[in-house]
Image (spheres, rainbow, N blue to C red):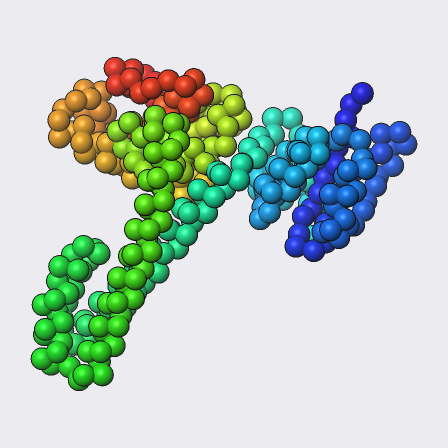
Length: 342
């Protein structure tokens, strides 16, 4: 017997459900409080539950799977085209139900608690990095008003700070100098927090065999390895390496009509953070390989294509290589890296 399909529009307090009764064909809608949701599903036959991949969705998916239900998470962008007329909870639930049954729909893998915890560390570190940059720019801006120029970059700022402080003490009022010293302490505190988060990521890398395996690939470090494994969820969620690269937005956009198809730049869909890490890793791999002349295909590609195009191509190759290693449980083989596999 075919399982019933139930769509849920989740929120903080009120949950809207939408499904079609298989016996009568009637459209059913139900609104439940947060505390009532699991109790209601405990009394229902095993069903296919569809939700948007938003805040709290992975936790609800894990709890519903423990009850025996099958859960599918949809990207929010895939649901929006099916919202009819006004946006309400009932309309959103109906749109989720409709979108979840479209052929060829790609679902978001349900993440484990460990994977979500690692991604939380990445988000915290990213936020701390933004705050450190803001505080550093404020320090530069204040000193620049008095003709004292600090260089760009955190390491360069630390090297130039003692000299800038001496000049500030010589020229500026004490109240201004004290405030600048406090600003420097705030930057140091943020840097300490960043280092603490990175230390935890390194510890996770040492304890996770999958992260250790892909960290051997050129251009893949602690941040990229831990983020890829946590974001991917399960390699089985993707049919092949190209599908994973497309999920990260590293494949060309296509525009075609009348049988003619044009390939444009990369689509830039999916997880921006992971794609950015892969692009930075590709730049590092290109610099290292170009310095040692270790990849002849890369030298040929650099001669024929602009540098940024080469970076995107190498990032695409990195994504495909990492998926292949994780899905097959293989180690990295440098001799297998050839241009034809891009």
